[in-house]
Image 1: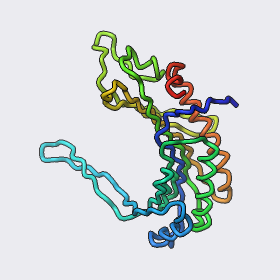
Image 2: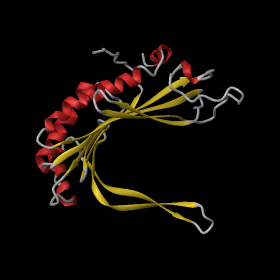
Image 3: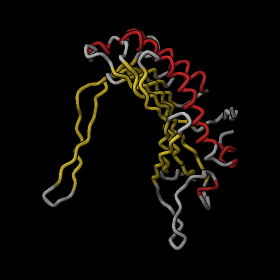
Image 4: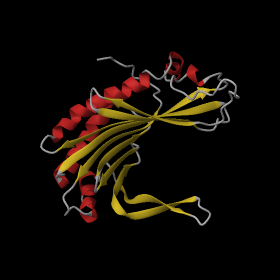
Length: 248
């Protein structure tokens, strides 16, 4: 297995470990609230999570109008403001969010696993249907630059006869990994330049595996290890040596 560098100034602004599960029908929002008692000392802040859905309709002129709507509560956010961590306990699963600073995979996955064990024992999901890791990176590139490829190897390419000045871009690529029966959704975009001439490039890597786990729920942790390797392959094969210097 390839060993990758752990950077002292990693660009990770948020890491998420997500487990989608199917709970028994008797588990409701009130019962989900009981999860807080198990973690209250570490995650004192609580906020109800409201599900959202987006609908569409045609206007009289024939244009499409987006109709955002909110459903009912579907879970809770439990937050540790001192440590920049959030636990989500939902009717459809569990998520552990770690905001910057991110330390390393072993600490992150170990804490996520201990918190998931509370969820597992408290609600006993009938089955797990999907697992995912998501890493949102903010790469601060000093201006000026001639080409995005100086820093990131998968980038928007403008036709040669057009202006090569790009004021904004949003790009999304789906990559399958048949070897581990997983997929990745890679999203790249940019934020406006800062006053001190820094261009923030957003490199968002979401790797996931859709699989039914019923009597083999412990298998998810081996699969999470594979997803983490997949995520690292995408990240380290997408950046240049010049980019790595920014993280030292």
